[in-house]
Image (cartoon, rainbow, N blue to C red; front, side):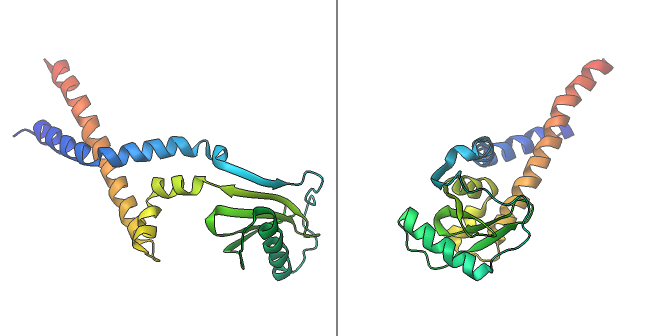
Length: 177
């Protein structure tokens, strides 16, 4: 069997097996370009703007208490603590992230709420990068995501190499005749 035939068979087998995954990656990748369309604004206070630069900041535990109280009130939820905090010094804001894709942005100096959102794009991101496998298997090490990423990356590389060879080799054969 010639190298061209071997590459054709390998390319066909890999492409047919991984078609669904590449389709999902393409679809979710396209949807991620419109991630902001999957965000619901619950509260926005345009009167309160962030300081141009965060020079003094309230203690983080106080800001978290304020954020949790306001979020529970405005979104009708019962959160006790945030999962993650992000301080944007240049913008003068502090963002708190909660379960179920809720987030609240506060003015770091005054603690006043600026924006409360619920982002639905997280599930799309999880499907796209394979993190959904870790949540399905309750894997704290992100092992499923890493294995998925390695398999998909190497498969795409293999399909690119074999596809290029399958496209280029017949052209070279015609040219040599």
